[in-house]
Length: 354
Image (cartoon, rainbow, N blue to C red; front, side):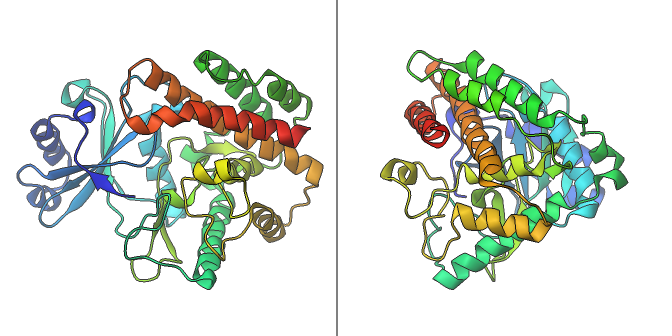
């Protein structure tokens, strides 16, 4: 994940924020936060805004909602902060939480600050200076999958703050119903309506599998890799969509982003992570390894639902952002292609449902 100068529309009063922050932390940390930090904005991601705050001896990360956000749990900073604070003791790949602000007078919205995990973060391509042999690429896939499986095997019943996220049976139905509603609310006149796909999803909903803690945005570009061995995962970022539900929904959502080397040109052009590299596992191999590791039996027909839902959900996420771009709520030029992406995802869903 690369960073750059803060976009004008995303700038904030650095002095005000750092003055507030120093008052929230222990004296030893406050001493490291003297003066205004250098601020850079991470330019990947398309939802909540993320900034690096760097002082001479300390680096922290600030997260805030995007401008023009439609609301909901994805932009709830308290929820995102509290979930990671609760998860940290039982899952080793979570950044440490530093402070949460719910006073709008400081920055204009809720935000939180966390430790910066040092290591490599991949984007669409590997960062400069980093290369992976086919054997290393496969090892990275195996270790990333192991981190996802480890998350799904967390015993949420032992952590009340996590167990409270479970709304009980009906998770799959609520997700289908919710994303249909969100897509329709965000639809613009230049994208497909997805109505046939929506009908198919409703008709093919499986019963919930045993619930687990799920990330809901588990991708290579949300992982921090060990600076000395980039096949190892030292951190998992972007917990804004995490909850408790059917873990196969998490896997299906992750694989919606997994553009492999033999995909069509459009799918490969839309990739956000270097999953096309020689040695990377295919989507089918990942599903097979995941199910074997967790002792699950999933037929091709059952998996088709999770795959189509993952693509439809990705279309819904992209369309919500594209709607903000069309309305002028964000001027980030990266979002201009999200409309064509939604059109392509409609065609991909249709090809899977026949």
